[in-house]
Image (cartoon, rainbow, N blue to C red):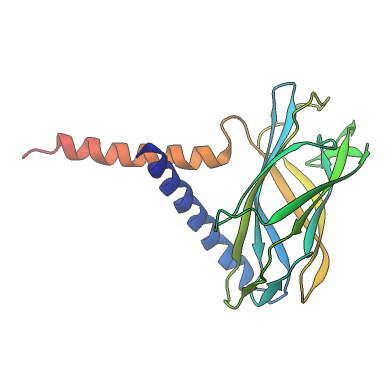
Amino acid sequence: MLSGFLAHRHLRALAMLGGLLILTFTATAEAGITLAGGSYKGVGDPKAHYDFFAYLDPHSVLVEDNYFTLDKLFGIKNGANYKITTPSKKQQWGVEFGALSHPHFIVSGIDYGKVPATDVTFEYLGSGKIKNDSNVPLLLAEIKIFEKNKTDLPAVPSGAQIPITYEYKTKDSSGTRSFSFTVVPEPSSFVIVALVGSCVTGLALLRKSLRPV
């Protein structure tokens, strides 16, 4: 029952995020793939941990071998761990890590020097096409990438923005877009959403129990 409760909280958080995205997409009709809701944590040594959502834009079609590539994902080396959760629960994505480079780690305008980084490509391998005939974004997957080995990364302040670019290709469109990961402390922003919802529910139940009969 607990797992079902947490899943419900998670889906509600996704719905809230989707509502915000709807407002964003009403201003554009461009086809393609959009990344959103990105968070970054430097955990452990620290080790980089990224979490984000991929959406298929309205009136777009995804077919086999379509993809999107995150350029120079800081702190990630070839062969990092990852987890992809799709709405259908089917594994329809392949992951390919590019060559290791050492670009400057620039966060909120501050240059922290050169750190290891890798391009990461997510390729759609589903047997059937995914078509979004609606006027709102279609959730493709929640994606987590986390480095399992020690990575020398500087500590950056919570709330800072890590900008990257990503390339994408769908059946009807291709291009390059900008995206930012927000630095979050432990626990991640997704867990915080669930905790806040739980606290609100708990307060409501407490007030109900204290109400005179």
